[in-house]
Amino acid sequence: MKKVWQVVIVDIHPTSMLGTKLILEEQQDLTVRGMTSTGTEGLELVSAHKPDLILMDYRLPEGQADQYIAQIKGLSNETHIIILTDEDNVKLFRYLMSLGASGMLSKQASPSQLIHLISGLREGYVSIPMSWLNSEDWGQPADSQSEEGIIELTETETFIMERIVQGITYDKIASEINVSRRSIDNYLRKIYVKLEVSSRAQAIERYALHARQSKTVS
Image 1 (cartoon, rainbow, N blue to C red):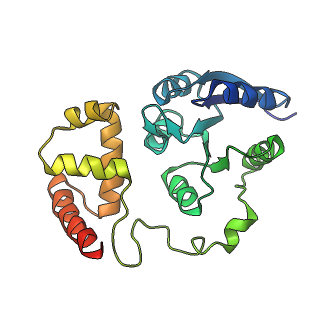
Image 2 (cartoon, rainbow, N blue to C red):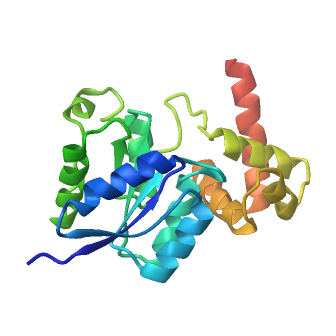
């Protein structure tokens, strides 16, 4: 008999969350240990239950789910993370996988597609839409820069760097975007990777160059 996987669901839509719970618990080898609509409470559930799987909405009240992936893996390294999103985006999938996610699934996916994805993870496989294999983005290097060398920061990452350049403290930035101080550290780790730097001073210098390049291109 298969091990019963413990699951945590983090979804901003209560009706959708309940529907997902009912779908999962129709399977004898899945049980939902907790549900919440916020990333912060999701981390608490992961810490308490060390689930085998967490289904997490990409857009949460505190920001995007990518800021929580490293924290989840830090609390429970064996936990699989599936991100639920409205976007059918190969680049986003590759980015989330590089952070430690185990898969991405459209919110419009059928119940059978969800169960198929989970079943694959149980066997050590990741499932993707076949259409992605024909996407121009599929064969591109999974790095943070475009062919023109312009670094692609998210809207939140750009805001954080702009505030850092202005000399704003990390605690103040955290309060401005309504996230924890620890989340700012996680954002900075990703920003440093994208900018290919290892310190605040280097990041400011590299970002200044990036900003000038962006203005030139535009």
